[in-house]
Length: 149
Image: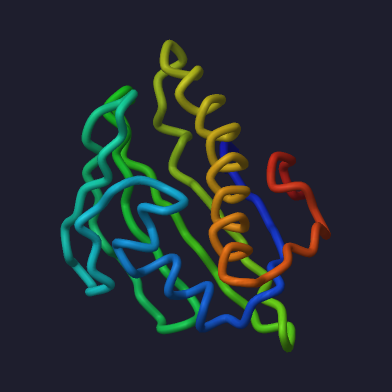
């Protein structure tokens, strides 16, 4: 089964991490420019210099807990799902990213899946950096560039 799963722990409260997942201005600091709104069924785009426009639709929103959206990379003929699940660990937040739906990817587009695995590690590291700029410290329980088991 082709799934990208990454888990990190951030020294920041869930509410602050949630803002970085749902506020378009904050999303642009660590991910990509977007017109995102955390509303179920809302279409939005992510603007990537390399790949172009990525079409997305919000599939699930549970405030401060879970965000799920469809994700259709221009370089692939498949619509995937991105899920962020947050858990409070007191002053820290556990974030689990899951990017699924890659099973439908044609073999000739396998490089899109492999590139996405690396890119998510990069983007999560940038999320941590953005939160650090607000005075938080990253607790590296797991390297965001490694797959979690």
